[in-house]
Each structure stands twice: as structure tokens, then as C-alpha cells.
Image 1 (cartoon, helix red, strand yellow):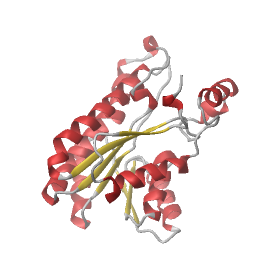
Image 2: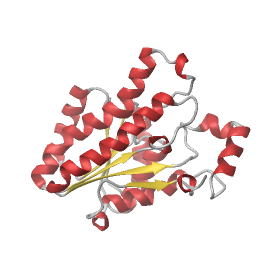
Image 3: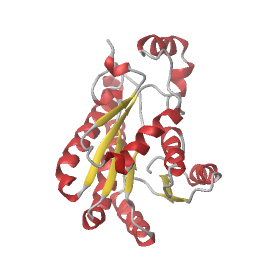
Image 4: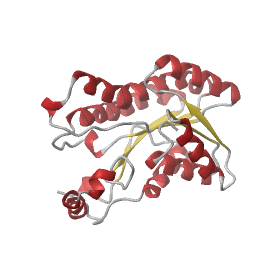
Length: 240
């Protein structure tokens, strides 16, 4: 589970743990990961931490090799991501590259490292956390939307390539959730009111509400589901 120290990643870790999975949470902040480990393990789950930077392919390869020696990685959740909101002409080259590295390079590097063992075992589940911005745009998030559109196509192309190896690759498209990353938007009364009006469910999502989709896609119930993006958005993407 990349980006598993908080927000949707932590919520998904809780959901998978309740379903009986052994969890490895990844991130760059060890203290945050240790706190997440303690929280998830309270229910008796097996939880470990793997602090490494998903944008560094050398670190990714080393971490995956170590984890595979300890046991097979049957489920990969690519969740780590960042966002930065600004008009396009305010983005620097460095801003663009850091966003692409975290949101698109990271899932590519981690998946590339994990896939060979999944192929040899002829089983595996890969779940990429996409976004409403994988399909629709908003002002001031052009780099983010571009990266998440890339994750959408990474999901679909991988699904086709890996299907003969009994590896299912799917995505989850969250709507607007009350997470740490969205704290400023939640606090913005005008924006928050817009979200509530625009979403048919008339509210923000709670992070725990994304976990069920991940548990389904990671389970044998989804063995014939691949290349699919499952929206968990209170109806946002179905309405206009």
C-alpha cells in the first residue's frame, strides 16, 4: 500500500486488514507510518512498514526485493500522490516534474518491480487510485489532471497486458473526500458548498467509504474484473 500513512490509503489499509489481509504500509515519513501501523494493528491485523520513496526506482526495487523475501506480494495498491493547485503559468518546471514523479512515475516503478513475481505465480491484484480528474478537468489542476489521466491509461493498458497471467488491474476513482490533502478545500466554505451541491449525495465522502471498493477489487469476487475504474464519488461522475 503506497501512501498508506494517512487519508484514503490508511482507510483502505483498515478495510483490507478487516478482510484478513496482511498489510505493508509505505510512505516517506517513518513516524507517520509507525502511527498508521499501530492504528491498523489494534484489530489484530499483521501490519509492517516500508519507508521508501516511490519516485526513486532504485529504492523501489530494493524495497520490493526485501518484501518478496519475506512473503509474496499478492495485492498492490498504488495510492501515493500529491497535488498542487495554481494557474498553469504559475507552475515551474520543477513543480511539473515533482507532480509527475509522485503521481505517475511512482505507480509505474512500483508496479514494474512487483509484476515479475506476480507473473511467475500467475496471480495478483493491482489497484490504482485514480481521480475524477482522470476524466474531467477543473481550473488550476492541469498537471494533476494530466498525471491522473495517465494513471487511468496505465491501469487499462496494464490490465490488457497482464490478463493472460491471471493478474487483474483496476482503478478506483474517488470523488471529494474529507482527507488531509483536501483540508484546505473542506475549510473553504464556498468550495465546500459547491461540492455538496454538485454531488448527488449532497456531501463529502468519508475516507472509510472507499475501503469496500478496494476490498472487492482485491478479492476473488473480482477475478473476472480487469481494466475497470470503479467510481466512489456519491454520484458526481454520473451527474451534470
